[in-house]
Length: 618
Image 1 (cartoon, one colour):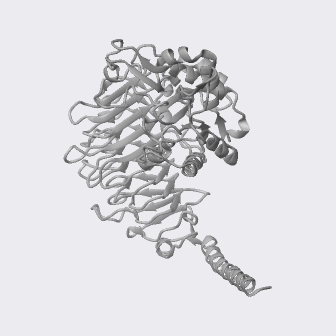
Image 2 (image 1 turned 180 degrees about the horizontal axis):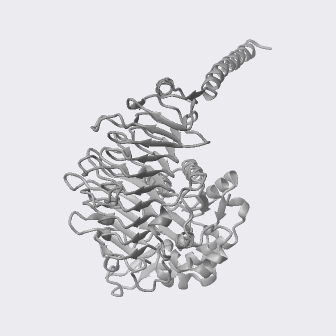
Image 3 (image 1 turned 180 degrees about the vertical axis):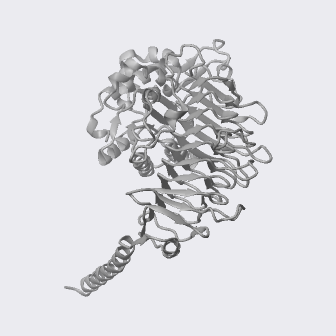
């Protein structure tokens, strides 16, 4: 053995020993934190346990009432891998009573200033301010109740981000002046990415949910299966002096801030004033599969200080409908519009206020499951050949005058998602209906789509069993345009990222090779123009076991069968002068589609979806 080999082996040995030592220390630390269990039987023991909590700790409370003498602070954070748990009793409710605290702004019950906590199974009552104020991020609060507090039951504030509030109730909250206190609040200086799911707010003095902003802007909050009931009325059902809205989407002192809010399968019923309230919010609001019943106004979105975007779909209204306005407005498929075929069930407040199920889930209400059909969203992620140029693509630009007949295939894909067609792709669709959400954008490569935050927007909106169809390549291969260009290896890395993050949300990724251009034609057949990019997609599909549609090959085959002359004039944007207002001088474009071409490509993809194998969809 020569000297170099000896040195190399010695160094390798030292590295291995160092790794083992490092692992032993990390494992010891991990073991100590994960298995540290504390039972806190008194208020004093609870305060001490919270003060000393470390990542991986679990604090277990007993059933009954803890009469608290001071507010509790949680300052120590867990980690994503080792969260800290605060858990109520499984044999009966754990009640933290803060009734001795005077009513003022420093009398919250619990102030959670830390990250990565899980709080479950607690009742927090009679605090002199918020029951629970969350100032940290990445926390989960589950199956908790907040009631009879002098301000908002649970409030997210101070840049709190990415918190998950699941199956919680907030009710009978009111201050002594009868002017304030919401059920829940993602408000003031709150951060982005917070989610409320399966929560109820009823008989709160002010609003069920309040999204008023001060000190932050352009944030996003999501509400799923949340119910706002009779807010603006007190515990004794007398009218209060508060605003009395179910869901207040936003608002700000200078009436300029954007609180982007998404409401899915939510109910606003018998709230004193508005079910879904604008309140000078300037952001984007999406309301889908929601129900508004006998509120003062079911929907209240006015022109003054109007929303940037309002999207209301597949929703129901009984009573005073109200009004809708957004600089970009999409209102379709709702009960008050023509061709609506749904049936609104007879739902009462008492039905909605029944006890929760044993696991904390909302009570079962006859008719609701049928009303809120399970909708699968198909997100389309890609470039101009996939984009929907109508509707919201260009603000303040008339599509018919400036772009028509230009169409990406995604623009017409919703046409294939009628009930009879959905049955043909039941191998991939887990829901009863399908909504196509086209996020594709012209001129984008995998890299620029990611850098501009467009991919993050898709991830934020993904739900379990949604589908993400990914088609890039045209712009990635543009070496002459360095602002777009992505090498083959970079292209593959971004595809890996898109697939991984889709799966993290328990959604289904489907990869497409780039659709063919109308060149080159060789001996009557259309050939590949995308170089090695289609092969790169296939490699990632095989490597990660992802469903694949070889759109490049399929489109070349279909276009070749039609012939060059036909697809040139019928499928691609080769237009004569004087026929279309947007193209007075005509157009010669063998990349983008007109309507017939977009429909042909959509048909190719729909047919391919029918043949995908289930093992590649999990």
